Image 1 (cartoon, rainbow over the protein chains, first blue to last red):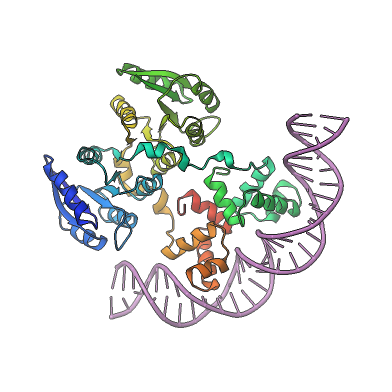
Image 2 (cartoon, rainbow over the protein chains, first blue to last red):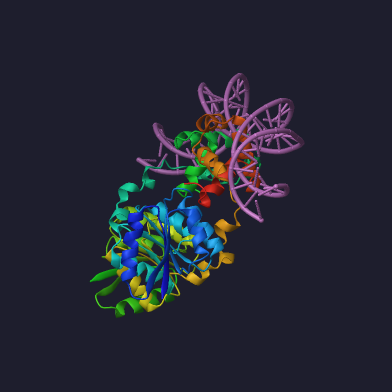
Length: 208
Length: 208
DNA sequence: TTAAATATCCACGAAAAAGGGGATTTTTAT
DNA sequence: ATAAAAATCCCCTTTTTCGTGGATATTTAA
């Protein structure tokens, strides 16, 4: 018997999930909660192998609740649920302890598969692959003005926290030169300062 | 007929995967490559629905190649493969365009399931759940000194290139406060300045 | 109900970066 | 060969950050 616990602030979603899960053999919904506080409280009392956890909760973010559940109940398997099928959401869920990710538009079969997956020791991710395959959402690296070899070298040192003077010593040029490189990169990449420059650079893999 | 292309610098791995895939009905390995350059060249010539892509390649990182393949061949479905089952690797693969993730210790059945999954429009993630469930083995977000909600908010603005003054206006506090948050983060994360702070933050997903 | 963590604020001086000019030499590619 | 790109260097002023060392209120957790 697999015990399932549901956390979602929409009663309709809870009932929908419950209907699907109760129809499955050897599956039982042992409890539900509409917010994080309620969830943590109930999880201490009722058995639960799998926790279906909505990302958008009224009190705490689902991400934070995810962390908390993992900390307090490390043996429970968390399946994130949300309306979004964004890559970023999935990444964040995984990073914060979820073992799977379901979109709310998932079919009954998919829900069953997801629960079976995590119980059998596999991650499960359901989402709209068509959506993810559309490259329009991806900002192409082609549009990047390319930095010169020297600029990249300087950039790497800047990212490591070295100042113009320290970099100058390292690559045997004057601090003015390093500063010029820095300014040129800021202009080229159309960012306002070094912080934004580094963010951009890491994001697009210009530096490690 | 599903066409599979394999990119891995270990010939043994290639042969192993080929053996498994060729045994499947309606599956065919149409080509293999040992490095990124070869892969991009061959993919222009041979048909491929699914690309099995090793993360550790000799010339370019698998992550970068992943991006490139998605840009040049957006219809191809990429399945990342590696020896690691770290949460961070999975996240990075997803972020960079992979639709699935396989560890090299996956069984023949799992490999088949993974290919079937992405072809049917579902992400597939195989990894050792036992490993992920053990909190001690998670090197990433748990080992990080955690930033407070306010700090993260400030951090996000810093990364966007705002100065202390601009952030102060935005979140209705004094510039001193913003500056304190900035300094505290630099101390907490043991970096030398803002540039290094941003690099660290982007790298570990503390900010977008 | 307390202790701890978080969020708020300040001052001061030193160091660094930003923004605006220029300039010359060395490489690279056509 | 020669034009373009890259790399080197400088000045000046203003703005921002860094490094100290504080302080108090508010929130959170044990």
